[in-house]
Length: 223
Length: 223
Image (tube, rainbow over the protein chains, first blue to last red):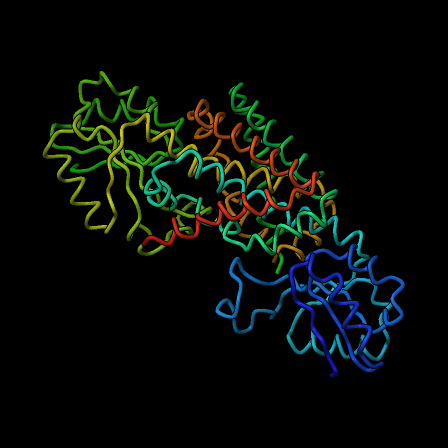
């Protein structure tokens, strides 16, 4: 084989990827697409076929999984993060880049530690916030018709990620636990701050915080 | 005039709507579209033209505001909540329903207190969660390119509501402060619970909670 792509929940990658690497020849590229990168890079650090491996994280997908969730052109214009590129054999690394270029992805490079910190905030915390929003609302609204009827006002998109697969996300949360716990703490601090301002009816400070956060509009509009 | 529609930030409605009601004739319908209903219903409780007023909340819109944010067919199939319908003059109430039907809205009825509790959870908490997610990520990611590059993985939709107008949302949060503060408390409790399970690496319980919350898929798919 020229290429083996490992796409399994991030806890199942251990014990699988090393067995695959054990039996491949020098010209086989093995890459993963997991949402955490420090654990897998550490795990394979001393593997004798380390140079056959490329650590990748294509930032693309939806809340749905399985063959029916396939989307044509899913990867076009999306970010692909590659870690420790220098540890991959040059020829195999070149092959990987050709594949990602053919998929029209935007490739960026990060060390595994930085990757896991950044995705804790920009990706994993979004999933935590969405799952817990769903939990809070389901617990309160015993009558599910109310959730459905009132979902139009923002809830539906904010809770979208809570439809994601628990088998995919449980191990991601666990593998990134230190970074994610810190992110959740900061998020909770901000929520408590906002609550205090609401309770104190501090409209000036409240407006200021919402205004500052509105900057997200310009940040996400750069494309 | 047959119809006066009051569509202003919910704090500006006081002092405006009563002056409007003061000068209208018996055949003029005045309705508001604010996101909180208990304060305005209480405010107009003893107004001598109370029967000219209808308290409405069409659950439709985007994170954008102003004329450029207009969307054709915005109201089709969306929920419209009417409060204290019995306090509106019958003929004027009928006119209002004809208008909402012509817009193809789904009208439901609630008392103002229940309305404000339900929207605290299903709408206002979504906005709080999204605004604070944006704040947390902006504070952490000093390099805004990282936010942009990594936004693909769920962040962009979860933070969408943080683009909303601070002048619209500050007074909504304040007018619904008691219900919203309770909702934020329950949300924070759930976030802290999830964090503990992550830190303890309790994958079984974590998976169970995410699975329970996945029900949101079926609830939102009822249409």
